[in-house]
Each structure stands twice: as C-alpha cells, then as structure tokens.
Image (tube, rainbow, N blue to C red):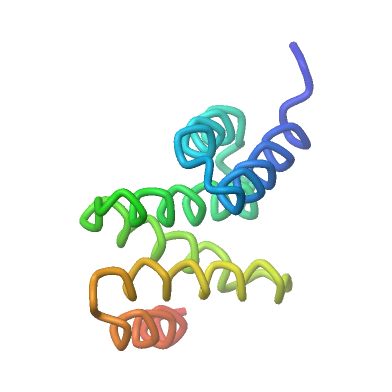
Length: 117
C-alpha cells in the first residue's frame, strides 16, 4: 500500500495551483483524486479539495453543487489553527457566492457557521 496522507494533501494543493492557471478540467480531476486519497480525519485535505472543487464548479456555472462544497470546506476548518487555509476557504466561498450574485450570503455563512461551534 502506498503513502496516502501526504499525497492527498499535495494533490489538493496541486488542484489549487492548476485552477489558478485556468485548467478547470484538470483541477477538477485532481480534486477527485485528493478526495479518494484523503482520510476521513484529514480535515485540511477534506476542506481543500472541497474548496477548490467549489470554485471550479462555480466557474462552470454549477452553483447548486458549488455552494454547499464551499460552505462545508469552511465549516471543516473552523476548529483548526491554519489562518491561511481559512482565508483561502473564505475567498473561495466569496467567489462562489459572488458568481451567483449573492455576495452578502457568502459573508453571512462563516459567521453563522462559527456561531454553531
């Protein structure tokens, strides 16, 4: 059996880099691989693939699929110490909701999620 923990994280990070290059199909495929490799307890990777997939879907105008993924990504990160990951998830959530014309909803979601902790 090969190593999966680090590989899943690197794959999710690679998906973000590939998305930034505008290669949506490849980014989506990498999120699928990261999802397959990530352990259920690997919160950072679980959040990362969801967040990247959400922005890919939003860029494809698949908002109903994108919104819950972006929200789940942020929810997963609420109890960890990584400010960078939280900012990325917030930015991705804002992009998803911004593309739907509901920017205000993006900023209400994190507050609502954090109050449910």
